[in-house]
Length: 435
Image (cartoon, rainbow, N blue to C red):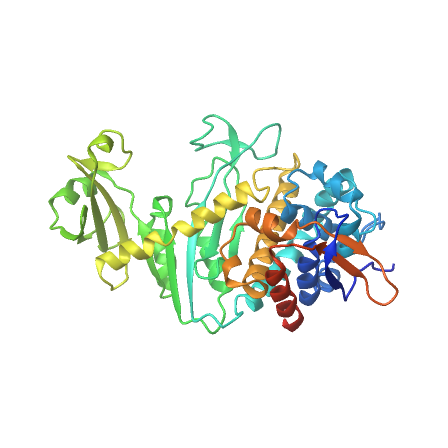
């Protein structure tokens, strides 16, 4: 079967007048081509198919592009079947219909997902070393709730603060705190406790650490406050800061500690404490904040008088205030999850079958990493912290007019595009990129 490809070389002109959306997709196409994404899909994610109207690389791209372009549900991919610029740039002249995409997910979940995850891990090993090798990793652990509507396999009623009583999924994820790369994750039923499976997730994360790494750091919220999690980290000589679950014995001890004010309204203390059933005492850092008068009766934190308290267990040998600040940087992972829900269709569960939904979950996180690598390696520094929603508006959805030519096709972009400099920067970086 002959594989269709997008154009290898494109001339860019800022003189377009009659334009259509998705003109900026040519930058992603160029980056994917430099990654050899089609070839990698063909060689590493192959499995038998009876219906070969579309190759496996074409079907995978037909799932990844709508995720990145914000089309949400699979049904809305119908828009891409009528967009000439998108089809010409991606090499998909006949975009598969939503039913074909959904059926592919069913087949892929059984035959291709393990292969895709191995490919993702190999790419992560290479891309996490760009633009310079990692010498330490910071693993930010978190979980989130995906509320479900309709009938989905393994939809269970569990902790769901926003939709109490609704069934959900409860995925567990890990991101690297410096690069913001997705490192590992699992889709789980909604009634699973946060910490369940964390030891196995950490072992999978540790197995992917590059040889250049000399330091391991782990940050997590109170849902991961478990001595088995800590023992797994210590077994790899890792350091950790985990927000403590404030049990009654710990609450009794906290107010009587010797606090040192580090800034107005913020004081810190530390102590040795051994939680029930833990093998030995650990270092705990306690943060005390003064509450404004109007919040003193409304806060959900542990409060005594006009103060609120938080505690962190750690084996880091640094100043207590540095422990607190290091943990606060973990807020980035919460922003990533918020972005996955708002700008990626993480909350749009596509099928009623758990295996197919799990396949979509991992394809979505693969798409997240592709965009993260694209921003880090191909775009100006000002674009590195942009959410996908902003990146779409600023770059990917620039109107374009694709004009075929015998020797070199031309993509015409708006004559007064504000992002000309960013596009030229990206083109140079993509041209130089090697892996």
